Length: 249
Image 1 (cartoon, rainbow, N blue to C red):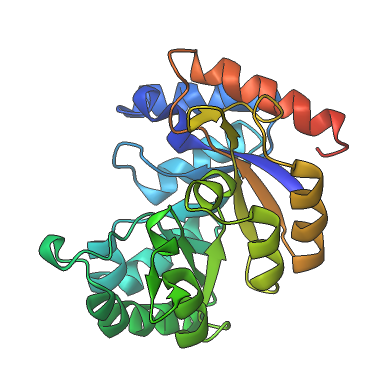
Image 2: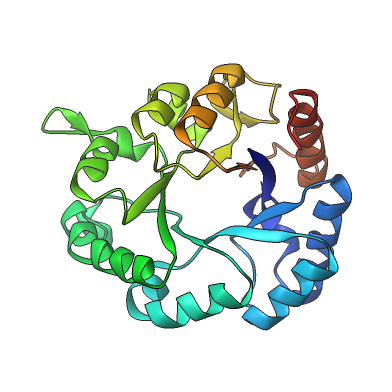
């Protein structure tokens, strides 16, 4: 398994192309070789391809706005071809009808887009938060999604913090979703429901690593949405050192 950085962690530094370029350089200087692109300013696919090559990085996953996934699917595929990214993700779905994001609306639209992505040699990745652990007919929404959308059409970017925040066991869910978790998010869970640098919270990452490897995970991406006032690049650095000490590179 390879380790990478989720750029959403440093999103405040990626609001302009110059800032985005500098953030890629700083992430590469920490030692990361893989990134997920999410939460950045708009960019051209050719520009990102050049920036990745310049810094010795590879983009392995994106979070793409839902409107583009549904309405510009072919263009999204072409863009990801340019910078060599196979996995295309949806970052958030509220399962809230009042916000126009009900379960029914998801099932009416995203499986169609996911199939189209597969036909374009891409793989649609759904990223969980804690709301997917609300139960519907006695089962978590996450389980319902896994049962209703074929594995060949949709994978899951299991997020360790949000699984635990929802009352689940991250390692157990990696086992349950085996075969459809090529990319996962690593963030630690500290007392007070705080996001923490890896190894500075309470998640049992030894079990996470064991189950992720058994489940076929290829990329473990460090993400810390909230760095609690610390420099996010410093948080990424400490998480990188933790993973290096665990034997990953």
